[in-house]
Length: 464
Ligand SMILES: Cc1cc2nc3c(=O)[nH]c(=O)nc-3n(C[C@H](O)[C@H](O)[C@H](O)COP(=O)(O)OP(=O)(O)OC[C@H]3O[C@@H](n4cnc5c(N)ncnc54)[C@H](O)[C@@H]3O)c2cc1C
Image (cartoon, rainbow, N blue to C red):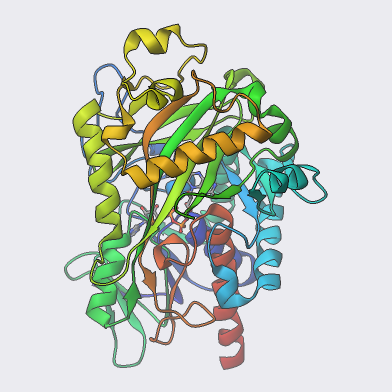
């Protein structure tokens, strides 16, 4: 059975939510339908409790990745306002516009529960010079840290505002897209059930990457895929990094290795936070988060050190390469492996006793092991070099007891060929957020949603 809508949005992650927000705010007269494969926010509960259920039981949709709020719902809620990382939105819409929209998104987050959170910035920081003096580059950014707790509150408030203005269809994955003869689209959510619309915004995120690949193949939309980031999560006493994290919260630092001239970078820094497992298609990798609420803080700071791997022809499956390395760590450790930096340097595995004797209390119950059996030498050499470089600006980073968890993998979606307005070669079919390959962050994904909603309303205005 078919119905009609003015706009269909596929995916209720940050990209889809901010598109919907703009339509609801500026054109409440429009019928906007949002399809979401996952659940409402309050029903998103991962069954892994560490006791009865210890590992992924492959739910129909993953409560961590799918549902209102998307992959970012239980994240640390760091909204970085920058063109230096987090995506390449600026290549499409221009640097000034991208920053303007990220600031606009920040304003909405602040007015929906984030008013008491802090904005950190690298502007005017003396740490830039200190980094430079030690062959490290501190990337420019302002970051709003909502924290996992406030991020949830903001999402709750935005949903409350939208739920009566936009039609949400939860637990309803879109199956396929058909182009109609009139130049519109049929968005199928059942064999015969569809919504027809002139405008479709796909915002399916990382979890919708295979769906997006199918759609691009069916509609002959060109794509490109050649990057994966691989590395470890470092955990150390928070005091070692406190001069950086107190001022900047998250410092994105890049190091060019002397040996191979590879770029190693810090990623997702969580002051006073916890290291956590992440499950991607049944493969356990590592991640981290922290809370805004001081009572939930730990004594440690964690961050990832990642090396980007770009592949050239004929190899195309960069994500498959990252998955294979993660699988290897799962095979050896039954999940994530943890190793003391001192043990890695001495060429021996860590064991329970060595970890227990160390001064850093692990915040994740991982299997002590040997990361050199998992990570390719070139990647591991780069990580070790960077740890020594960081030790110069944060003495203690290269201590024997610093913990390294592996592996951390950052998968990238293939890039969908899009024009400057994030429109595919099909008029009215837009692709935004992480699913487009253009963004890999909350702020860029959200900004792309605002941008495309604006474009569509502009065009609708011109038609009317
Ligand atoms: C643990 C974790 C922590 C993170 N922390 C941060 C952070 O602190 N700062 C930061 O900038 N970024 C962070 N990120 C990344 C950030 O969450 C993503 O960049 C962001 O969520 C991308 O938004 P999106 O809307 O493009 O996609 P997503 O958030 O992935 O949302 C896509 C939505 O589309 C739905 N969907 C997929 N396919 C279909 C379909 N066929 N039909 C219907 N619905 C579909 C999915 O269920 C999902 O809800 C983190 C990610 C993770 C996993």
